[in-house]
Image (cartoon, rainbow, N blue to C red):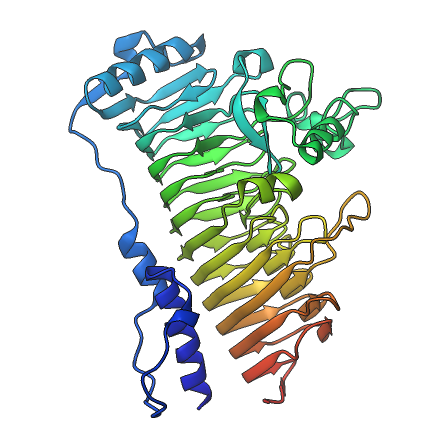
Length: 480
């Protein structure tokens, strides 16, 4: 019976993925009980529906447009000309050959595949002024006009970044990173940083007051770092095979985008807020075969911060993460904390998470200023070596610098972990902090073995966690 209940749960989610209609409108013709059928994996249905871009077999080598791979010549114009020519010709590959190519921001256009050959290293300028004029972008879940992302596409279709090359943001303790305000990353007392009144407090105020995005102008004279790769309102996006390192801020940030595939990418970047991949307001996303070794969350699914998230009101949904390796980071797969428009239908399977510097495996974080919802999260066939705090952490009281309490009660439901093995879960096996006003609902663990945890679990303001064949610290958990 328990298996049938879980199969029905998965079948319902599959129906909602393919046919997003209210199930309340479907009334049975009679009350005869029928066996639950074998269901297709909803994750496979999502993957099948994702459109991966294809490109004409036409090449545009950046060296034919004046690029010089000596590591010192600035090649921004050569990249721009090659991409424009490729786009105007109907599409193809912009080829980056072996060499070290210094450049400012790269702006992709429709039907262009920026393809890097083995030995290609793209070095991004350390000069913030090279990332002007400002463009429509986002910072921690709030839209604004700011420095251009290092690789940027706005409103484009069929774009890609592929190959065997390395994209080096060249961020470090002498540029970009000190703006976070931490001595660990090179900040020195008296330097401007992101928490100065002219920076994040000003942006937060604009968010709260509903200032039009076109009037939220930052960039020069401000200290809000750009993302590395950001497709903004794009469709059919592919990132494949490449390596990202030394990012100023978040690494891959598809925002308001659909049909995104991230395949075989390596993120090795340990700067402040160096999240690996942050889909935001995005739908139909497939992240596979990747390695994440990061200074923050490996993968963090987001949907806007506070008023901005409620204004945009686009949930992130239909996201599949599979066959990935998570090393250092604050969390393996995370939902939040910028989550005000909600997240649903997330599938994580066949991943390995293991590092003494990985804090949690699966994490959901929000508060009553962010609000939002998280529902229908399925985590299956995961091998966890060690994490610091918990295999599963759900926190609706999340805050960093100060208390963040408001009137938007988060809703979290339908979180299902199956076939998980954990050697060392750190402080807790399961850690949940819900709200009395809206308890966390329907948390199910099935076929989970946690060999070691300092404490089995700590759960407050949640429905009882349902255990099905779960062992923690050698003790079989009671099934209800």
